[in-house]
Length: 275
Length: 275
Image (tube, rainbow over all chains, first blue to last red; front, side):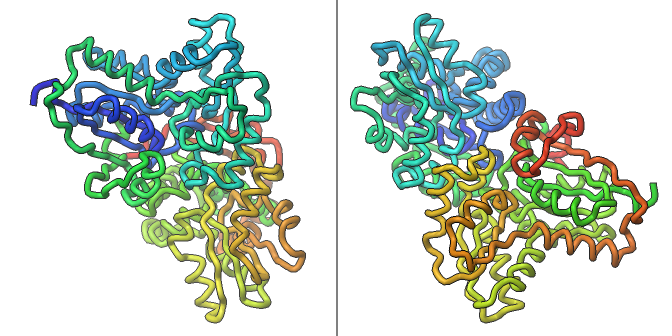
């Protein structure tokens, strides 16, 4: 295996990152992927930044031991808590997160510079989106709302019922004239159809997945790490730190396709928790 | 310190167990308590039984190192996954959980032997309540429903708003002629007022907290470990594996009183994760 045919490592607290994986595979059909979900310790969105950084470092090490050519943090909370740390820890490995691509997507989409952000507690508290957007668009007015309950709803598959409707209505209630809504958590794209029905047609609903795929393409290209177009991508291999059955069952909500349990490997979180 | 004046160790995945602690302190005012919330890895209710058993063993060791005279597992999921294991690991320490007391409370309360149980995924999957109730009441008909979303709602303090109402209505929709509703998760007592407004007046709403306090009293008495009535209980000491600020803020929802951050100590989950 040359460097170019090595897989790309992707990790998330659990299943939400599968919405990103889906976009990566679509944009980069010749690449192979290895996905790690830290299901034994999910969610990350209500944990402190220090704890999330520690978990993210362990996740990165697990993937690097498996030999990867690039690393994608497919979790907003882990990106805000750990991206610079991981880039410093692994200076020769291209490492990208989902926050900067999401901010770029928002800046491209907004016309009136009024932006709403839905994300987890820890992502909102980090101010990462607010800071990145304002760097590029100093006059932007950003309304951000922590809505960790949506993570639990998404994992239960409650993405279109009355409970989901009431929860989204609750979280949207503080937004007014924003023309762009950023889904700043990789769990949230599953609510897009319901959100579209609750918001005026003029509101753009943006997530990080496609923008992250474009960013990954650029990074691979600039590092001459793209797999050749003749390369046949291997099936994605999945690693989880807890129950294969639950990952398979819940993961399908986010991946939008059937997940074969044969492709999912259970690893012991305690083997690397001391790292 | 004699054995009798040692504190009682209480642990939970996070804050839900504070509803149990509250009942323990009320019933046993001369006892001191040390409470451990595994906030770095919460919730337990969607994790596999194997993982929860591993976490529970680590939690028990942390408390035992601090010197305790008895251990209460103030978490339904951890009780179903780990009680016999912990009793076998620490044969000289009285260890009790919340499931048997909850089952006893239900059996006492029901007249028509139709019982509804709301709990987490892993508690429901364990069949622990179903088995314990039917041992005593073979003709009981038990309808059990996993409702992990309620854990997230409770931790957000959404215990009486429209989202909580819609979620409870959703979960109660499969119940019909049950005269007793068991709250099989220590997070759920905070929904009691809203549940009472949604259910017929004739339905008993039962949780494990008071019954666990009675069970603990009996166990301490039979082991001659009760603190004397002249004993002045120390203020409860709290240990957490993640953010003190969040534990303090969210914990008050469950404890029903102000939590002083001076009583809360952060411990590093990685120090014992290899045990």
